[in-house]
Length: 223
Image 1 (cartoon, helix red, strand yellow):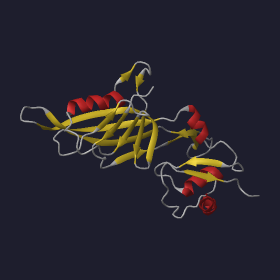
Image 2 (cartoon, rainbow, N blue to C red):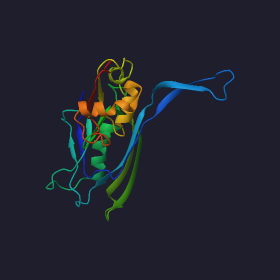
Image 3 (cartoon, rainbow, N blue to C red):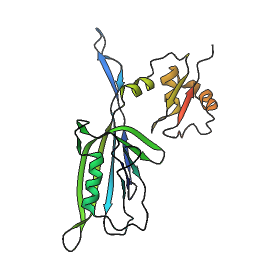
Image 4 (tube, rainbow, N blue to C red):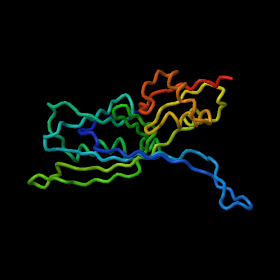
């Protein structure tokens, strides 16, 4: 079920995007330290802060309850909109990212979009509000919201992106923020030395700067 979209007033100044890998440790008799083997990729986390302003200095936010997808988009709304009511805007935002959804038995699953960045299957983990400016009547007219999300791949997506197939087969991989072609080649081929062939196959001119969200084709190894 679609809840809506929310387009914020100001892009975040900084986005922290954290990824991890879990390893299994096995004790080996006679060895100085345990051996570690890959277990799985850990949960991805993303953190950023948003400004909600009701002074009229910043264009109003845009909440669309009839949106085409449950998502959160960073951008700016029309300059002709009246100033936001900060409390009402926060309630609209919380309806998408924080409130309990009885049909889902928890908060809504959220897609985060900002420029070329698109992270799916995110769930709110932390939500902290600081009111930083008030009207003479004591009404909040500006708030800073610190957000933390956990991003979890569903079973189908995890199977699609897991590297469980032979390097002799073709792989289609989605570039995530921070990915490097050397490392992606090593994950597929068990060696980074094929990065030039992959760059040529995908018409990549600058392999040191991959675009998050793009698809890369990893051809089978030639015998």
